[in-house]
Every structure is written in structure tokens, then in C-alpha cells.
Length: 74
Image (cartoon, rainbow, N blue to C red; front, top):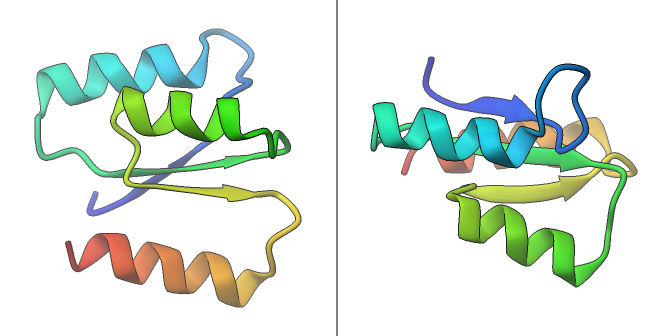
């Protein structure tokens, strides 16, 4: 997996805690958070947890594809 797309709100675990755990196991792990939350606090929390990018669910498919490509290229 080059880039994972994750949500903050997930049924069994908070996406940010999962992201932290995955980054601890695999430091090069890259993820984009795709969330309904657009508050700067959520964005900063995601970046602090190790997210490589953050998009809201209102983004268009082209924006998501571009973000995945960009993060995938490093």
C-alpha cells in the first residue's frame, strides 16, 4: 500500500489513534485523512498524528485522486 485513505470517525477505533499506531509500526506509512470535519483543530490533530494530507468529504474525486498521487510520490 502506497497511500491509505482513512477517516477520523471509524466504527471500532478512532482513525487518528489507528494512524499513530500504524506509523509507529511502519514509520514510512502514508495516509490521507478524508473526513466530514473541516475545523482547523481536526486538521492539525490529523497532521500531528502523522497524516500526510487532509481532505474534507466535500472534495471532488479529482482532488482526492490528485492528493493520493501527490502523497504517493512523497
